[in-house]
Length: 385
Image 1 (cartoon, rainbow, N blue to C red):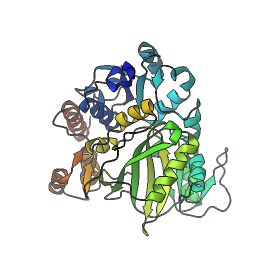
Image 2 (cartoon, rainbow, N blue to C red):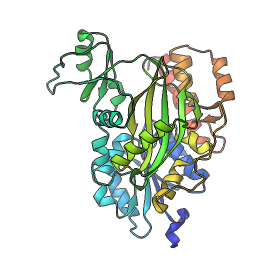
Image 3 (cartoon, rainbow, N blue to C red):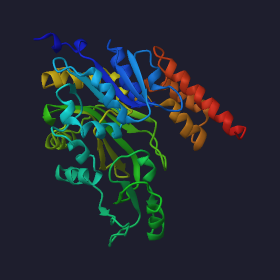
């Protein structure tokens, strides 16, 4: 085997914003002895870019600046790995796949623009139903904003594809008046979906290589509480034991031809039935929990791209009741905004968690920067500045 068969011979580039999604990838690589290059879109403070594990960091204002930076890391003999950490940069890179593929290993579906095509939510729903997953009834909104016939209320508006602030365009509507109002607020194209009362949500984080022929659904995260306009920041992490679900995901990703880290999201209704929501073709916020359990998704992606398969011992048994917690977001939502639990109860939740997404005793600067920013934000709000 050549020198480039060793992961240590390759460079790794992590691209994202000042968020704990890319921070998890940076820490995953750093803890494995790999110092990545970080390309980070500037935020209001340094967070992901403050990690001690970074070899070099590029702060940018616009993702289109990425290509000038990547030019300096082109190596056809020992390709650089690129790990994208949000939907916008994933699509930007996907649309330039033909220009990048000879120099980089990156998320792809075998052809330029194909990830972007399958990132369309309606297309995903058709594919999910084809592969045996439960899908809620949907309706298309006219290009002129006109409402379709036969809408059964309540419905929820869902973005057709991901764009900046796309998560703000979800509205639950009980009647035509509310729906018309909601459509007037959306920033991008949406479709309508039957609203199903959820008990919780479930996310599967994994990795796919060899055009989707080799898929590892590494962790299954079940949220411990529900919020009306946000997702739970606490989850119980387990192995994905449902063989039918695993097969459906594998055949979907195989039809797409996907190679990369992914997250599949499902809603769990009051009867514990799973309803497919979407697949994200990039690293997710929760992937660091997989690293903490011995399944380092960035490394598994890299190894899988080099070998065409994963090592035989890639999937690890997860202890019962393993809890992961995005502790600072949990405090802001569950304690400050909704007052679901007291600060003391929150401290108990932090103490019992097996994996934290912000605090890391070996990489403290991002955590302190986040705390400092939140304190300043509260003081500015309190004094009316």
